Length: 96
Image 1: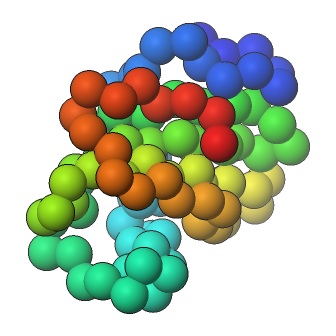
Image 2 (image 1 turned 45 degrees about the vertical axis):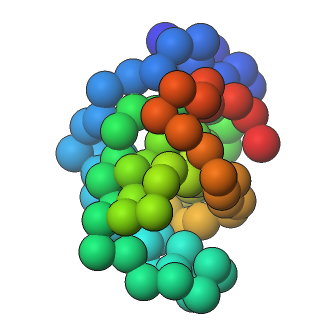
Image 3 (image 1 turned 90 degrees about the vertical axis):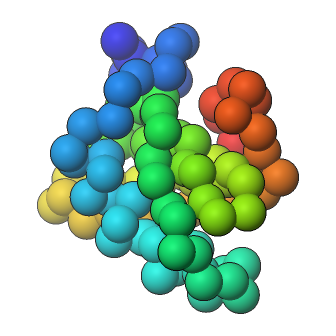
């Protein structure tokens, strides 16, 4: 569970809402990293409730793992805010 302003302590299982947000920002990730992913599977996430929600998502790709910070505004629009590359399955999802 997350409190307003704080990031959840433990990774959560992927929900349809998070899966959809990841799919919607995939083109932004590919453009930003100049890569095309045939594998782009969300594994787990943490969230932060703000004036909307920040999702911190661990995503499996065809060349490893990335962490994404996706902001979903109050109108339900997801936007890619930040990416961390070079992650592993074991890496904890932290605020970035």
